[in-house]
Length: 199
Image 1 (cartoon, rainbow, N blue to C red):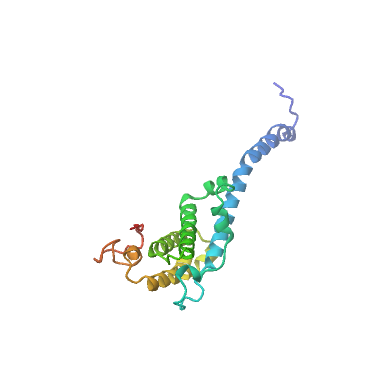
Image 2 (cartoon, rainbow, N blue to C red):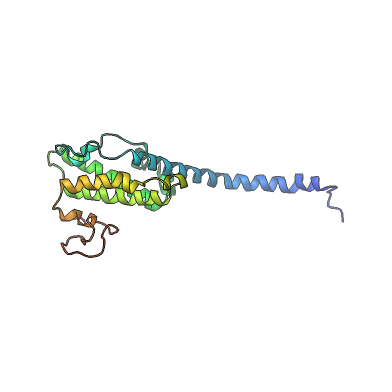
């Protein structure tokens, strides 16, 4: 039975090429979205690596005044209405912690401008979300970035030290102090992996 194909070339032209183009057309959006997510992770990693506190020894500044720069990843996750599809396509762990760290930062700035000062709650929440975002990005880092110190060491630790110095006795920051469970002064297993509690 002759199906109208005289050679292998005919089969390729009639069947395989259209099927391959169809698969590419269907798969291309997923490939493009994955590339955007990887680019966003790389951008966030790069920008957070430049977000260490400015002049951490200056005790005259409130904790959030040690960072005057603004970042593109902050704008992207902060504009959820315009970027809803993209933000929802990100890994939930990353999008949650990055958005929350900048929400806490903005709340601290607003609180400070209102004349209230700076509460340890926002500082501790900022530090917690920065730690979790840094851990996530360090795990997902490229092979070359894994050879260098990660964001936990280069960005989170300086912020942790600054916040501990500004709020040395705050029970709201207990979760950041190894060996102290949130809200208690008893020692126990390292509490860095626990979620902070608000008071």
